[in-house]
Amino acid sequence: MIKLIIALWIIFFVYLAYLLFDYLKYKYLLKKLKTTKFPDVYRKYLQNIPHYQKLPKKLKTKIEYSILLFINLKKFIGVYVEVTDEIKVIISFYACLIVINKKNSCYEELEYIYVYPHTMILDNIRNSGGIYTKEKFLISGESIGESVIVSWDEAKKDAYHLRHQNVIVHEFTHELDFESGTVNGVPPLEKSKYNEWINIIYKDYQEFAKRISNHKNLEKYKLINPYGATNEAEFFAVVSEMFWTKPKTLKLHFPDIYKEYKEFFNFDSAKYFDF
Image (tube, rainbow, N blue to C red; front, side, top):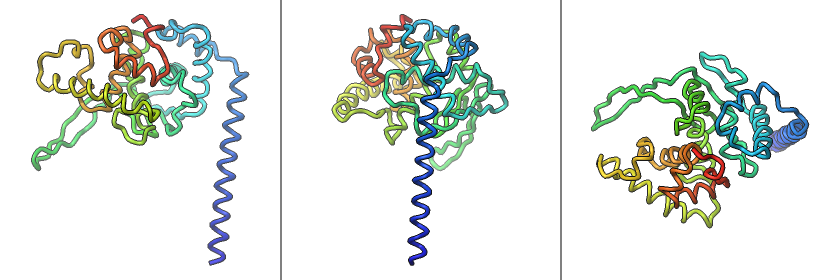
């Protein structure tokens, strides 16, 4: 019994030592990056991105630091594609943009970014009344908590050309959703904001989903990607894409939603991005 207790204490202290080492390593990295010059080759890629072009100098400096931190903390893994500086910078830029004004947010649970060259074809088993059928469907990205998957050809198009959609924003919004503990379209919120979010966002989601299901009378809801009707989590991600890629449209037609997203992201996207 005594030996077991001693062994448990040893494990406990080893674990504490590991946490301390990890913390000190992180603090050293932060200090080092403060004096690290942002590589010119990185900025060359950023200068071709409309969102970066619209940012004021102060926010450009801020996001460049965030990009360096993100690249140093996360592991990029190419699947049938070489992970280049361009891939790292573009993905990191949008991942950091959506949390640019959120304190202490660098996707703590996220470890890996898997990059595929093209849109992926996945198999899905569907059960209908006990009859199972195998279906194939296309995805350009996926988020599963500790990992994000991105199709590079789609991500590159979204970054350099304003297509009013953005797979990187979409998947990293799911990562924020994961941080609340449940992927349900409700990101981490202050308790005082929770009921307001539910009342406004869920109400619009339910109306949107109903209209999509009926295939008629979409009216202003035709501005939202129909994929958002899949569930509450996809609605959150799809509307987040709107918030960052066509904020003036979102603000004009869905002012209540825009207000909630503005407060959550702590960013007035319509002020900077006149898309």
